[in-house]
Image (cartoon, rainbow, N blue to C red; front, side, top):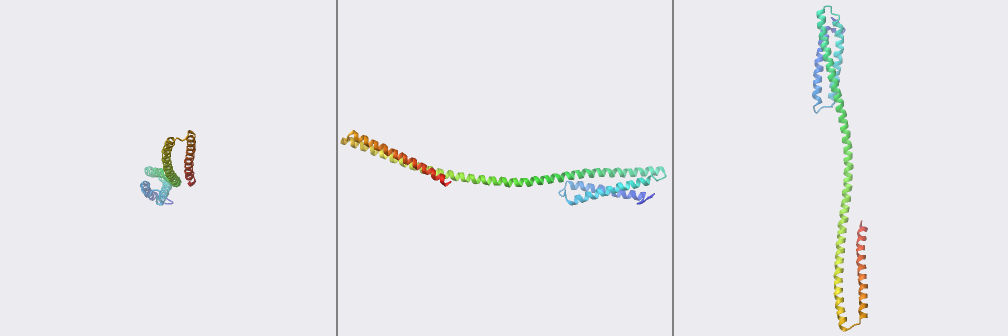
Length: 225
């Protein structure tokens, strides 16, 4: 029997060749899916070629079905029916496998795009975090410099206070010696009280000077920052 595209046997042979090529193409696609070249243009092109072959096989099955129905001898008709149905079933199975592959491929591409987008966001966030760390490092450096200057000012203040304390002790010793001398020569109590009042005034002046010195040091550090 002959159809528009050749005899039943010729069309059947063409369908079988396309079936073998489609099966081989699908196996190559599955190997590419888990290789380093996954997602490339070659993979997309091969998928399109396999789909085209399967569509052609199904078209040939329609043609062969029309031809085997016109076979007069029942045994031959039943034999061709089984052959055509077998090819049609295999073609349908290959199409289902190709559809599953395409779904996985689309999922992989979507996940790759999402990863690329997240990576872009992460790079932007990293730059922002680095800027924050840099600002915090600069602020910490400024605080440490201020702390060092404050420690230096405190050391100067302690040295000044120690010097004033030494002078105070020397003044007390001189004062005691003067009182001893005055008591020895018989100076009156009124003169001694006058000297004590003057000594108290001198102490107040001394403490005021110490306070003004400390205030000046803190003002100087504050002005520097």
